[in-house]
Image (cartoon, rainbow, N blue to C red; front, side, top):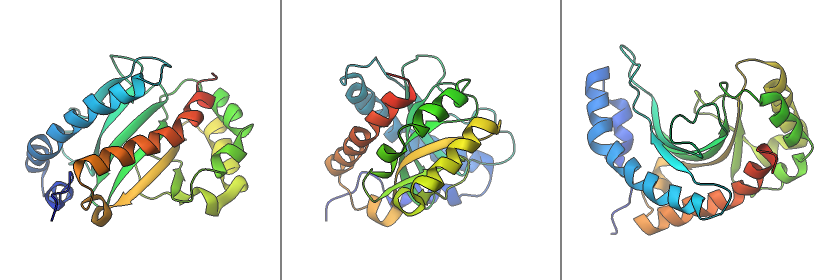
Length: 208
């Protein structure tokens, strides 16, 4: 049987008790893989010609008590910091892999982004049926974009426009069982295909 790029040991890191022990698991098992993902996917994003993208592996450096429940590598067209910019993320919760496009609460242009996306809701709900959407990157749950439809997406966008802490997350989730079945090439193919689907949405977000 082919070894998956992600393993159950990777996902099990998020079950390790205690900040120090979980951080050690992240640093030894997951972050080296995020570095590889960061290099390959930032090159792929940059090749699309919009701008140069840089990878940012989450370090969780501010945590002093609670261990992280998820971790990721983010991609943005800035060498320093990504949270104030629309950005892509590839990461893990204990339950699933995620590949997303994110506008999080630090973004200063949430009102403009909400308006631009609201004018293009049909493009959002015409994404493939396994795409999901969320209003909070701190929670693992998300809504199927086809199931909530235009009204559900509009509701999230109105919240993004008016609520300070509101966010807008769209992309794909893959259960740990399915993620661990993907060999390295299959995983990267899946990631790049997801980015291909999300990039027109990214262009809308940045007003291109």
